[in-house]
Structures are given as C-alpha cells and as structure tokens.
Length: 317
Image (cartoon, rainbow, N blue to C red):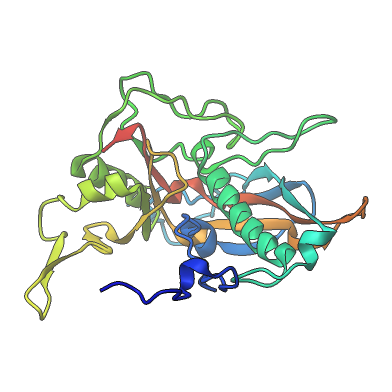
C-alpha cells in the first residue's frame, strides 16, 4: 500500500538522534599469559643481578672408615647472572577540544586512550620477554635492552642439530642471541625429548607456551596423555589444557606474542619480572592547547636458573 499524501516519515527528518551503541567491542590480542603469571620483584639498578647454584652429581661411594680424618671436598662458587632493565614508554596527546567533547561509549578521550596504551605496553613487554634478543647495556644514544628468554636457555634445547641452528655462544647468559636454523615440524618426539632433558637437569616444568598452530598439532599427540572427554550433550571435546607426561604434568598455553618458531617449556617459579620503575601513568609538560600523558615502565626479565627451562627450537606447525 502507498503512503497517504504529505506523510512525514524518517526519510524527511533532520532531527533524528544517532543510534550508536554505548559499548565498544574489541577483539585485539591483549592477553599476556607469561607476563601475568611471572613473579614480580624489584630492581634497584639498571644492571639487575641474581645468583644461581648447583649441586654436584650423586655418588654411591660416600662411605668412610670409623675414626678416619675428614677431608674437605672442593666446592664451587655461585654463578652471578644479570640482565639490563628496558624502558617501555608511550605517550598520548589530546587536544583541549577533544578532551572536552562528549564521547559515545566512554568518558574522556584521554582516559580511554591511556587504558589502551597500558594494554599495548604489556603486549610489548610480553613480546620482548619471548624475543630472541640479547641484552644491551646501553650508552648515550643507545637504548638499554633486556635479554629475552631464548638468549638464556642453553642446557635443554632440542631440534638444534643440522639446519644451521645454534645455541647462544659465550659464557655470559643473555649476552648473545640464538642462531636460527632451518624449520622442521613440531612433533611429540621433540616435545618428549625436551621434557626429559629438563627433568634430567633437575627442573620441574609446569607450563608450555606455543602458538595456536603448534597447539593444534599437539592435539594430535598419541597415547594416554592426550585426554578426550564426552560432554553431557553428546559433543566430544578435546581436553589438552593439562598434559601428563612421565616427567610431570604441564599446562599448554597458546601465546600470541612469542616467535612462531619456538615452543617454550617453563618452570614458572624460575622466572620473574624485576621492576626498577613499575608501570605508571603521569602527565607531561603542557605545550599549547593540549594535554599529554605518558605510560612508562622500566623492568627486566629474571631467569633464576635456565636449567629448569626448555626450548624446542626452529619449529613449524
């Protein structure tokens, strides 16, 4: 049917209120599982140091004659390990007008942007911790850089034979990066071998960080360790959040911010984030008709003992 003559409808109106949802939807990858799970400690200098120690191997010959003279054993000193703090900072400048207008879905523009920046900075920190980068002491004109996980793990690394790959060189942990080799497929044999290496070295791993593609391959691991369960509605679900091995149970955690070529087998209590300046939001000097604030954090990675960690290097799913 046609409208009656001179019907005024929405197409004629210039006074309609915009229909905009007050909820802002975001699907950006802001999760930082490693950073969130790490112990937090303090640093008191840009050069942050800690000590590691080790026990000698067990022997079955520790027996002695009654009344004999006790001779002291040779002992080794603790090892001093270090890393450098890295400054993470980001700034937001908002014009005076933009800070004053009414926004849909949130309040002031500055508060909204600072919240986003804080999430983005945590993502940067997670990426730096996973990165295959050595520490940099810094100098005038050169920014300090924290050494990433891959530059510390040397003892328990699988998949390094052939293909040109090599562990970090030298005697100072964190000082050199690992040399990447040719990519090979991630599989259960490599995972089991690395788990065994960590256990043989004295570690008790509890978490495995890997990409979504590598996790998909892990879902196809065979044996009783890979659990399956049938839900009440008849649907079959794959349960691989906890994976049981002869060397302990580990939680598989997909990570968006690590290198796609690496699978990390970690003992959580052997990692920490040492902060010289914890993350803070502070105003900067006003310059003209605007407001500027920065989010800043200065921190570094602490690898308390790399023998408790494992790396399956140069993997492709």
